[in-house]
Image 1 (cartoon, rainbow, N blue to C red):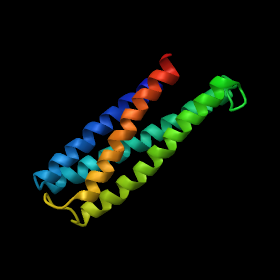
Image 2: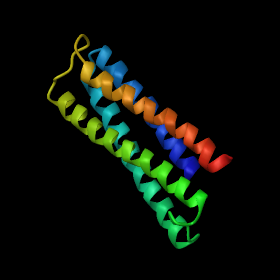
Image 3: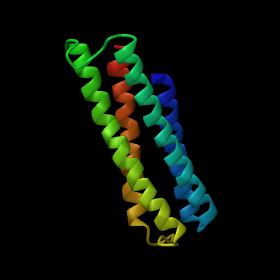
Image 4: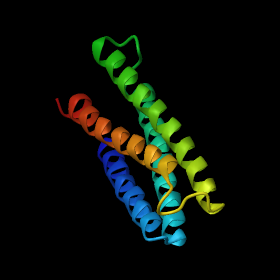
Length: 135
């Protein structure tokens, strides 16, 4: 699941970039589809994370009280999951605003702020993946 989650978030970075290109080209259809795909990938990431937590708890007996690894695992991935949740909610707001035509190629600061945040969440996950799952 961690590798699948990594692929999901990397793909979501590509879809939000594709949405941004659509915005710059004044292609609302591309913008709206790209944002929808990014939201879907974010929600899928969160569902996979929940499945991983369930597996870690029920199959491996991993909890916050399981020592340093359990505490580190749940705190780092949980904090990241919280930020993915916030990012997904922001993406939904931006998606709804895009549907209403609130952004133009010249005026789209709100979109760019959310896109930068989403890319940051992607990069943080790559670090977490290496630190939590590979080391």
